[in-house]
Amino acid sequence: MSASSIHAAHIYAQVAKAAAEAPRTDDPAIARPNFGALVQNAIGNVQASLATGEAAAASVAAGEANLVDVATAVSAAEVTLETAIAVRNRVIEAYQDILRMPI
Image (cartoon, rainbow, N blue to C red):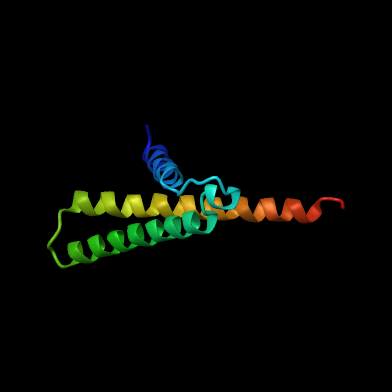
């Protein structure tokens, strides 16, 4: 498995876990997972990954970190950012498709 497919599987597991932990009741409005919360959680994960990569790069510049660990952290941050950009692009495409639909 490549790093991107492992990361995608990890993100899928996080979203599935968040959806499973959503409160379940008989009220249909509450029974559904909160999409806004899922998006905010995903954005938070992207920010945390980028911050980890930046911190690792700063620590190697100071001579305090192992180069392999830094390369791994930066690579993970890059994959996370690419995934977020791909999702954003797909959302924009879907929105544009909806706008082009005849009424």
